[in-house]
Length: 200
Length: 109
Image 1 (cartoon, helix red, strand yellow):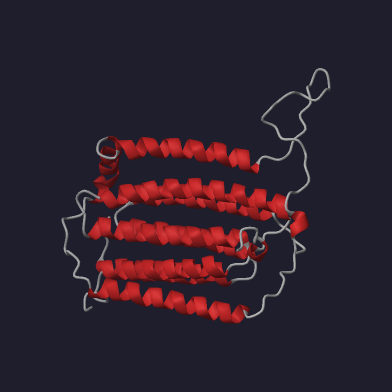
Image 2 (cartoon, one colour):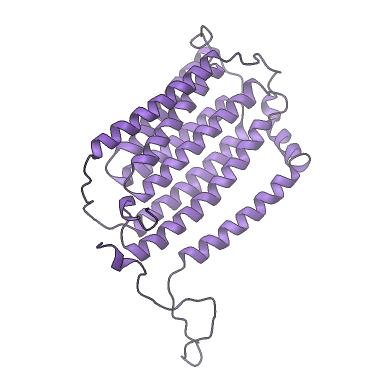
């Protein structure tokens, strides 16, 4: 994608402003639902940054996977665990926050110093631009074939694991006889395991 | 340093943005009381890493774009992580009836 330099700069500044404000909102806002929607905005802005970096395929994948799948999954999780609860007060909570903010500022300063002082090998080779998608396909089926196949196995494992972990306790009855069906995988109802220790 | 604010957004500008996003993610990861927000912070950190990979891929490795392939793999792993993480969260909520991170202290020494 070739656009004028000033336009690109303005796009970058607007998108990075959205990313910065949205990320701060995600961690600082009280309402978890606002956080989830701001997270979607951050994901969209990051996809825009990918477009600025000549990566249309990854931008599309970002929108599909992050906004379409992960953000929706997070919203579902918020709905499923939506219980109003008053969080127990912790002593020295503000001190804890300031200390961790100091640690994070230290990390940020370190990263900024590395970014500014390192002599990057610039300018690199000319960007491939619109051929990026075809180039990614070539990579995935030649030198990155093994990671690609492993990623599919990983996704299968994650899917089965998520189903096993999140499955509700179900009594399964046979449709014809009405008796309890013998299905070894299906758990029976049980009381929560760890409740009695919460008081201690 | 003079390349940082001259005309086109430079590699350093992307890297600084990614560094800030990563640090916000770390802060949220440490300080969130709500377990869902912890997962959101992890997603922020993964996005920061992805921005880094894409910036290097575009500016330093423009002809082979290995960074973009890595970003695709990171997105894949992030999807798997989000699914399993939220399943663990639901399981925790079913057993503890809370999402407060301070209550999950079974392994505390």
